[in-house]
Image (tube, rainbow, N blue to C red):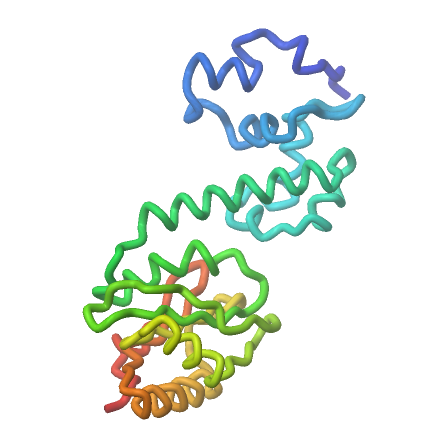
Length: 230
């Protein structure tokens, strides 16, 4: 077994903080970046070693890392709630930055909807149902989370959705929910809810212009597939 050497005894060229300051953040490995977030290690492992344990838990997949809970991270010896929360907070900031960069002020296509919702939904392990409120020019007024549920389904209350839509003076609505399973195909329940909300919207002089299903690997658009009806 290799002898443990504390990071403070490493050469400056190898210390993550010094390396980032001298050469830029892009020169650091994922383990080194995580090590900086952790701040310190244990008596037997450096912060970078702990970071490697975290990455191993996530199978070296950053998308899987983003799905780990506080409880999951705390399975690793040397990781307590404080360190776990720091990691989750950093991942959330990265997701919000990505959303800010990719989101248009207007919805012009299903891809614009996907760009808006993917950072919000891609790492969820349970279903959430959202509605995007738009004006008549399809400018985004508000993203509204209508409900969240289990791994395989969620229940959206039309009364709550349209009450919120009226409060925001919405004219057009886009429905969106995620499938944590990765299955892009809409279920029979997805079709029934879509038809129900389309009918309710017409009675309020509103329009449902799309319903998007989001997964880690892509999206499904009811509008693109011609499944919104007349």
